[in-house]
Length: 50
Image 1 (cartoon, helix red, strand yellow):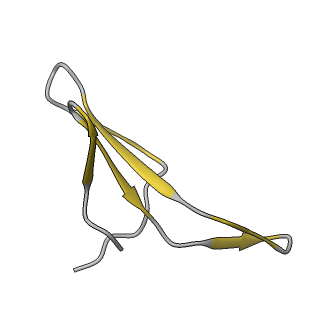
Image 2 (image 1 turned 180 degrees about the vertical axis):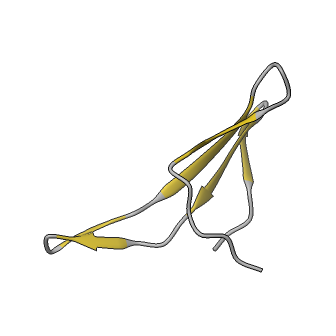
């Protein structure tokens, strides 16, 4: 898995593994957004690695 990559101010993305469903392969990507109150919103989380 790749490291967090800056996409825009307070927005990072990480490319996840490819997944296969019904014979079709899809890419996955997680987005992490730092909100104005300092909390994080995570969209489409992927497994973490050490």
